[in-house]
Image 1 (tube, rainbow, N blue to C red):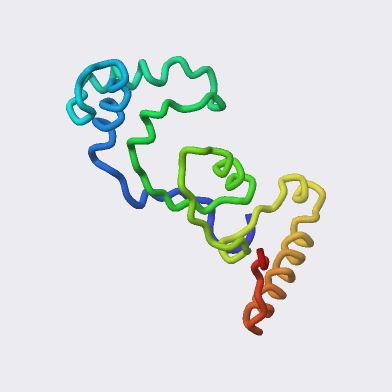
Image 2: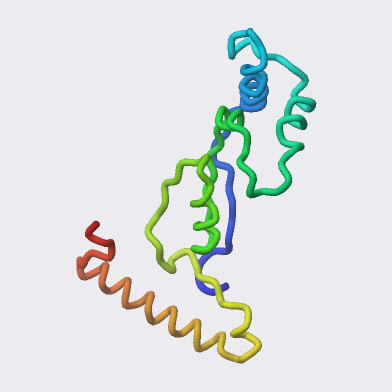
Length: 142
């Protein structure tokens, strides 16, 4: 990794009542109780809700949409695209750039090209900063 900060995930905000809301939402379709009265053993309900998922690509149960968490994530664009494919989240993102760092491809170090790569990325970042400073738009017109 070069320049800037390391990848990170920071929990910014959470709903302390999230577990109860998820349990109530999971039980709601199977009962005649109002949503806010749904009660059950949280561990047992959550286990039943999630145990049948064979892998991470299986859709998560809708009951999980009743829980809200806000995270601040610093990661590379590949990780962003993985999150982007996840449909049960709302994203607010900053513009792409190198201010928070960039990844050095693992194979470059073994070839002795990591310094050349870092210089090229830093040169591109410098041009980007100058374009922004001069007032030219760095975002697309669409």
